Amino acid sequence: MKSARSKRPAKPPRSGASRNAGRRGPGGYLERHLQVLVHSLGQLNRAPLSALITAAVIGIALALPAGLYVLVDHARQLGGHWKETTQISLFLKQDIDAKQGAALADTLAEKESVERVEYITPQQALAEFREFSGFGDVLDSLESNPLPGVIVVQPDAS
Image 1 (spheres, one colour):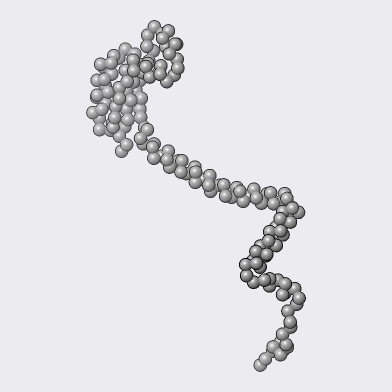
Image 2: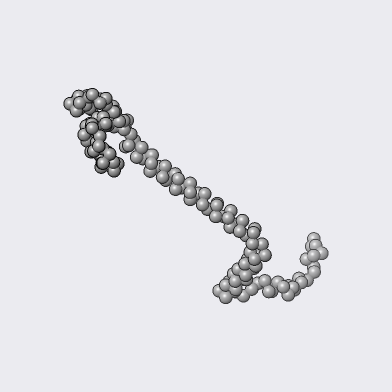
């Protein structure tokens, strides 16, 4: 059984329908894009505040993942060097001489949990401090060396 609609003849398209079809080919494609561009710029001109807010939201949405990536990458680089920079500085009493300090450093170096030991004499510490601090004149005015001997211990990473 056929419906009443199928018996009616098809209506010809309205005049606007042929206009929307546009030209086929690259010229029509570019022409339509130009129309959309002009329309979009008109919308931006009519509501500049909402367009600015939309652009800001898009910018934030793009910046957040990029910022998170940079943060995670730097944290990964920092974490990779974390074990390498672990060290303990032992400041010795002033009355311990270089021979006793070196003997203590040798004793610590024999421990299994210690990877590296370095003994810095008070004279070496003073020379290094003079070089990096810029207080050479002040250090020359002192009667004695105020810096103690130091044992720098780097524990085993495991």
